[in-house]
Image (cartoon, rainbow, N blue to C red; front, side):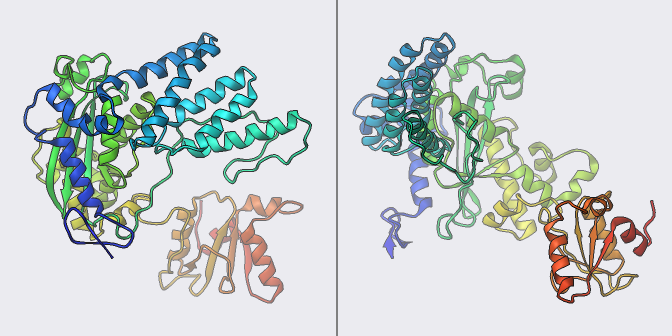
Length: 491
């Protein structure tokens, strides 16, 4: 049992500090009096001091490096200047690897991927393999690209063997259908896989709520980030970070949040802010209202060559729809302003930190009203609003009706929805099951499927029912029209 070096309390096995203590430490370093007005230079130094110490050089010098490289490489590729693009990329690989060696995170996959793409276009296949092997040997920044690049490496080696006349088996990947005619493609930033929480990793009522505002319709033009840290079910600290989006401010957006181009002069851009935000939000639950904030940060990550934030997202819009389905009846929707009004939450709408605080309070209210804790809500939002697991329709019978005592299963394409069919069967007194087994007494197959079964492949449920019938089980296989007649449903 380890002891947390920050609070001195037991920290669990294989853990030096509580995750929440670490987050509070990072959050405090990020915010250092940030709720008060501070000069831009002072604020910038408070964010980058630790990074500068790690890198051994002023991190402010990195301000435009990432975006400039991305823009230059994309421009050179469009212009067909591939050799020049390589000359831009290679020094960046050295920089990323030096930073990684200094403890400032992993290398960004985008640069290696672009180098591999350019080498392939130049038919410099050995160099393509070399740069991908170079990537494979590094610690990788968060995101979904590392698996894709390792697949690219395996395919590049396979093609090299093919060119050499070696008849080697083509690599097969679990999530990629093998197709010998398909070209090698790259997915630089696909949707990141969900992060699972360990039982001792996330205190049940501790999370960080987040909101962003943008300068214009481009979601990557983030000009403000609001964070609200909730501990033990209460607001602990909140913070607003103004960001220079390095983009135009649309008058419509200004009218919404009040942030102007003048307000962000001298503020850090997302290329600077992203590494620190990623550190603060690593392996925590990040609460936000609607997909806007998550999408904006993902697009900003792509724009600046960073990986997606390594956190678990929880959308309070999806929470609200499941916690209070009756609110949908009046047509006012589930916007944060409506929910705040509904639950008497006072806040300043479109102030990023205030919107984040309101989202956090909505989640706490949902927890209180539903009895579900944080981890349970993370699971619940992935289920349909009515709580029924997608594709699952099992239910008990009504206790009376023409099919009382029967156990029914549906398969194939029905004219009515499977959900409606299950409700009809239940009302007719029938127990509805999702699987065929020895208890099954009726299998309902779509009429079209019954007509097409001769010489065609039957569904797995249909085949299993046939096998059980052969063993003596009394299962009746009927069509949808027969089912309707049995339940006295017309039309």
